[in-house]
Length: 302
Length: 162
Image 1 (cartoon, rainbow over the protein chains, first blue to last red):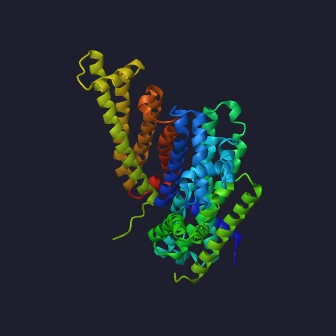
Image 2: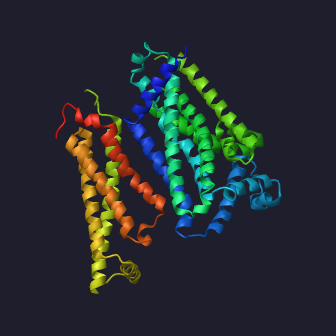
């Protein structure tokens, strides 16, 4: 039986407890530090005058197009011809998508969010790997279970981890937007807030399945470090495996869709229908991972 | 052997303090050396490579004085010492050595970064404003953790000192 009150208590306790644990401190510190570093990586070339904004916009548009072609498994064998395919060939939609991100919306914010979309999935397991496994390892979960149900505990820990992650992402994005609003001319910051809200929604949706995967690993493995390694290993290993299997036989590349890697970029698509689908897929992935976690945790010998 | 009841976050903070003490310590040594080199250039006694002399001259032209460098290096030294000492205090949960010296270390670290931004030209800083904001994050994070999250661990620790 699910008790909402219990879930909220578990979520609150997890958030408070996370700030006191080594892994929680490492998660908060690394997320903010790496997030700001990525934003700095995007902003520095223009700010330091290494390149001018127009040239940077052009090369960023090409790089994003190549990234999108990789993510959508449409790279093909003819790498040399990629740019012309994006201009007038079969990848023209990706070329337009890249231009939408850097021309029609604040370029530096788009680049920062795309970089965060690549790195956050690897960082997020740091916030969730101890959620269940730490109590199982130390057997303290036995003191909790007489007072609550396993499902309430699992959902509460998931909610707490997700809320903490969302708060961190919000803080990170707010600091980047405030900084960009200071350095950019006032007329170019008008479109910043709506686009930042859209980016925030995209990153929050992206975080959901990865946090759920972390919770699934935490509920599956008794040792926190094994849970962390499993979550990071799956997150990093799957796209590498998919891209190399695609070389052998193209349909095998579809295993990329076992994780949100295959559609997460569509959260920033110009097509509203694609964005809606990507949000539904994210929720679906989260539900799937949490169902597996609940099944595993219910059967676990604690 | 009884397991320690020290929160893991304090151990993590002590590791981070060690990391930042090393980082600021390295920069402090660099600032001291640059200040002495600048003095030699001002007095016309510098005998180093021509390219390095040109770099030092450009610093002087941009208004950096050996005195600025020495003040920065001194603040860096204070931050390094305070952060290093506070590692022990954090591990022992000492209110004076851990919490307060850690706080002073955080303030010294923030002052070191802020004065660097204010006094040094971009040629030395080699970073965008965001990378500087990133550097400022840790001192504030440290002070927040010591005074909000771990406050009770220092005040109500049975074997506390100070």
